[in-house]
Length: 226
Image 1 (cartoon, rainbow, N blue to C red):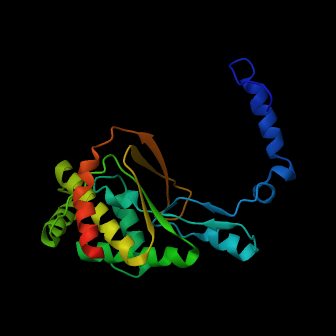
Image 2: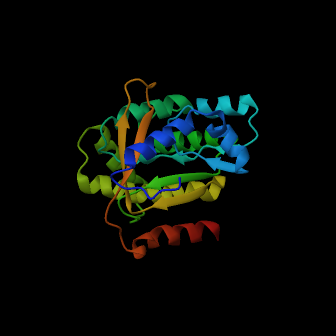
Image 3: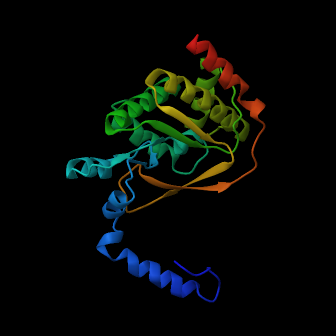
């Protein structure tokens, strides 16, 4: 492009870009080779089958296309359609999710599925980076309330804060890099045309929290590493 984009030429610029994208030299594999892209990571829901990644690997494409584990849709206990995704998570990992302990195991199994597919990191878009260490019985109680459809907004927030610590603990154990985006709010949109458990996620800005809210997570992680 050689012109400054504005309201008068926007449509012409769009048409030019659209035309370029129909040409072979602008296809993803051609661009990857032209710009010497050595690695490209996608963001994938924890329940994603990663079938697209499997096809890429089978195709022999030499570029490093890696999935990234994103469990946002499973953390919000009040998210619409959450339990369908939790059920799919359990089925895909061979774990029947009936309580908090089995929910954690199912997430761990799913992370094990992502790693051989090339995953090197996890990705978390959260409203706040606040972390809170719940004792196992307290976390189990909140999860049970959610199963019964009686979880409160405060309980859901505490559970999300607790799960960030759990995600840090899992990253220490399996080596996946933990990435947190505390100024983003994840919006999950189910797609009726996709298999059960698959969703599309988008993020939008929201108010960030103080770095001090991560203190419980830092303390727990340091203790685990010691």
